[in-house]
Length: 144
Image (cartoon, rainbow, N blue to C red; front, side, top):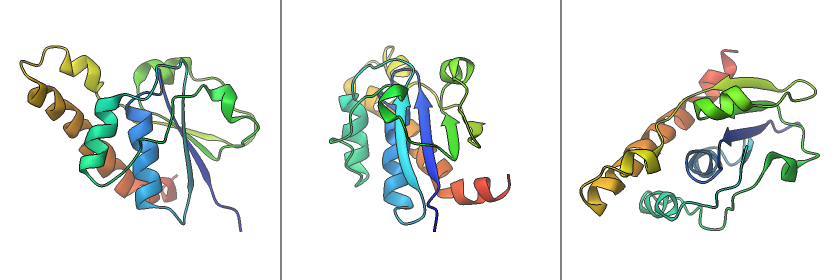
């Protein structure tokens, strides 16, 4: 039986795509294989790991990687989670179905935060939006 492989692609593979990979593995461990990568490599964002940990999802062992590091995996679905990655997304050979779901960039939102708690609030809001998307992912994919 084939387990669908899903790639979350973002610019730096530091935050949103990492959270999506973590939520996917947490919510749907037996139905899909989840991966994340970036157009560039920015390192795992420690605040993303922190807020995911608050929700019971440990992504601290995940690491930032380029798409080329995942070769020769053939993906069934490629989901871009930021507009830049969507615009720069390479062509994927085979049957990969591309989807786009934009999520706000927590580090960008946190730049203007007046406190660390306010900054973490931005990360938590995006974490929760990504979780909601991943909860609904089987229905989204079934509707394609």
